[in-house]
Image (cartoon, rainbow, N blue to C red):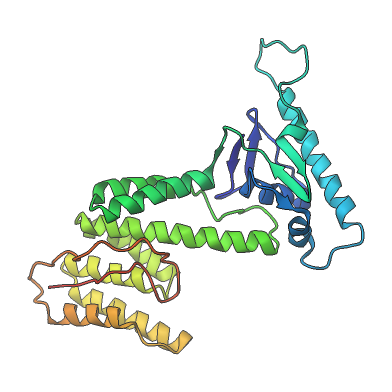
Length: 293
């Protein structure tokens, strides 16, 4: 089985899609796919579908959706390559793929692949490489992890409480990987190459302090100190206006370092690798000092 949820939902068995077009069965499949090889309780599926206001027929309706998914799985399992022996039953049955367990259902990934699990594997390796000082390896691994994303998680799925929460969690993980990939590229001296990307990111995430700090560093190390200070003032204005907050001491320290640095002076790299902590919060990002000498 091949599961993709980091963008448009696509679940394939035996090379054929088993994703239904109807919104609610698609919603059921999305949650089962995200939790592949783990039992999803009936109560969680019902809550996802009807947000705490299930109809009296909720369990029966859910069973109908599961049967519809199994019909699609059966068609996929019967699909065989041209010239193959079409006699006899398929090696697996739909009930072996979408299993009924006490209290819930489980989609069996088996030896297949999941883009979420591959993302988590690659990003975890990237964080460890960054901690070890292997900035080139970290950048490469985190680029590979981020390339798995083709759009927002569950982009074409009607999301309820469970999937909405998971989509936010996955987006936070994506932001963390993005932040750390930029961190690695800064350590590699790719300041000018990052400017266009950081221009877009700081506009999109207008209160994300670490992205703004990285943009300030990239600008300053590219000889554009005035623009780096402008980035700080824009961020401060947004934080004060929208959140009633001042920039963190860490960011104010970076601003002061840029103010006192001579425009032509070489800029020191950061003194310690950034921690691989989530970087998507409104005001916080990767830990570790950002200094300009």
